[in-house]
Image (cartoon, rainbow, N blue to C red; front, side):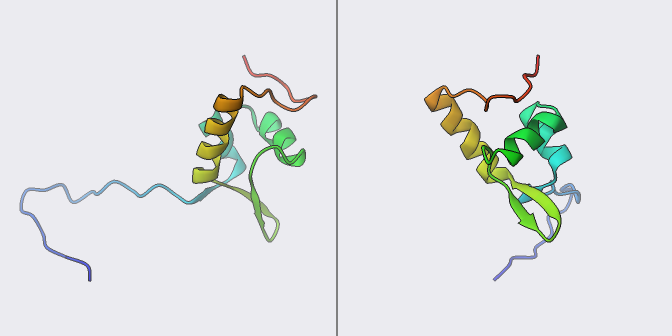
Length: 85
């Protein structure tokens, strides 16, 4: 059961919860890569993504796991993927 108590003087603007899925533009920004790099990784199957109808979306949790795994393994991007400065 949810507790709906109101605290006097507390900010009414609660932080927005983190989204479960993000689009390619947001995912590229989160990863600090270009949209072209993200698409190349997606197309190569190197980055986790899901399709809902025609949309390609990225799980924020899966992106975090993907980054951690790449850090541990010291892997490089797929061949042919542009490098970001």
